[in-house]
Image 1: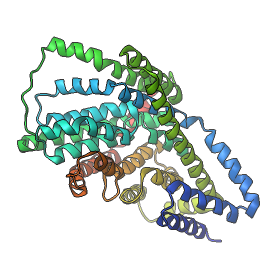
Image 2 (image 1 turned 90 degrees about the vertical axis):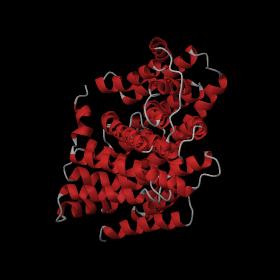
Image 3 (image 1 turned 135 degrees about the vertical axis):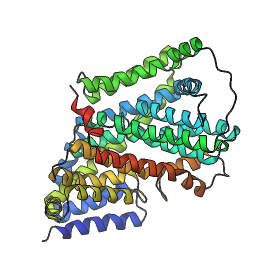
Length: 437
């Protein structure tokens, strides 16, 4: 049998299941189970599937996920995030589009503490939208920065999707996490510069507001009390991974413990906080394990049928430059991001695209970051970007989906420009991992 026949059958079955409205995880498992039964010897293929399940969830590389979720939840539920926001507001008060800049800065900082785009976006919307609207900010300067900042949590470590990608693809999770630092900051810098530029050109988009600025000594004292401890948590996680002192799992555990210590110091630790954080981490970790088992089983099925080898052979023999083939895979991911969620893109894309990139001789860390950047854009690309619906669900009813779509457009272009820079200058993604201990 030609290798492309089972590939077409499996993908067609998956698309058919999704078209029927079956949730993506269950759709994958229906196709995978049927595939193991048909292509691996009927009922004798089921034990192979069970073996695949057992081996895929016994992966040490995905264990940082619950700790990263706990970190973000403790900071949000304890009110530490609100303290951080107020301090950032004090330092940016004289800049055009102050609250939009606070949104970008807070999104960047919280991305380095939570790893959850949906959670960061929801937090920023609840905390900043009422004040920005009351001060006369144009809807585009409220919605756009919130969504753009929220998606940074996929790129800037610690990122849950980065951990999942590393675990599924076999790319070093530690190096992949560190590789996201410079591209993530590049995205944030582009967003901040755009806000300053557009608000300088059109001040009416973000009317300036007079505010009493405390003395420098008072600002420094408040910064030391409310912001530096959170920055120390970031150092605990990223610094220990970068120096090789801790594995990503160990660093995540240290970071989670550190956030509980902060909650104790600020006298915010109680049973409700512990219960809420634990349940959130349990739900996300369960979903992660289901994703991992499904993606790895799907990858094994493609390999057994010869589809993986066939795809790589075609990629190698195409009369195109290898970099063009890589760009094509990224374009496919960008198109998929308009219609399906990031988890689906991981489950479909990792078994197919990552082997192509490595076969062509590209640095897997560099391609892994580009893969993440491509699926990150799916959060804010119409019509089904997930952050659109998070914002719509929290914002007042007079905010339409059309307004939300229009607000995202400048940040989509800025993200594409930053992504091109990472393609042209691979060192933006590979330099820091190359310095790791």
